[in-house]
Length: 91
Image (cartoon, rainbow, N blue to C red; front, side, top):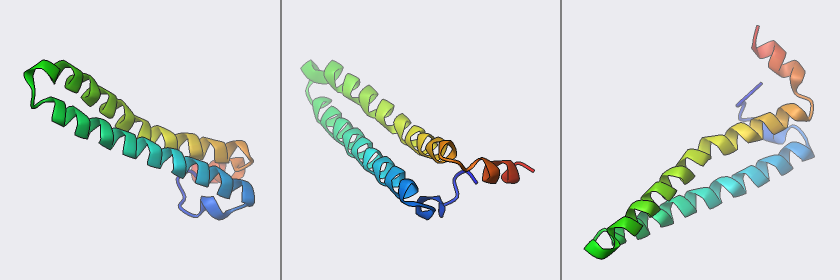
């Protein structure tokens, strides 16, 4: 079943996929936070407002990647053979 919290423990391959996706999720989270913090600091000076705006945009893109990482993880679970579970959840 998609987005089942127990999926990560189904096999060693599931655990590996989960670990990589959690690492990517964490990197994206920290990157987004850093971009927003630096962007906020740049807003204090009129000369760096444009750069701050671009960093805010970058942070927003990173926050948009967060749900994409989870979706890619779930699709990876499906690729390794969870089609029966998916069909059962759609009934």
